[in-house]
Length: 74
Image (cartoon, rainbow, N blue to C red):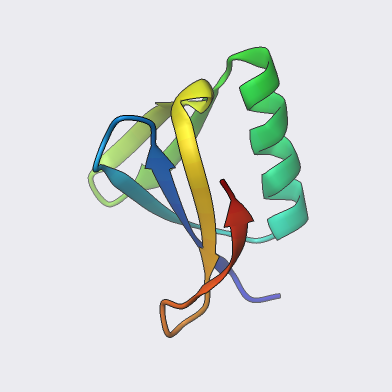
């Protein structure tokens, strides 16, 4: 299964985080649970690990290889 590119935008910020996920449904369920429980979502990239307060997530976009929006949570 191919990885899905994801962009995560935060409330009140121009900052956008990008990551890739293996399973879009599993990722979406995990994020929804973290938002409800006030948890942190952790992303690991070439610069290290980043913890995102899930309650501060403004939107999530799933994009294809051409960087076009496929679907997301807003």
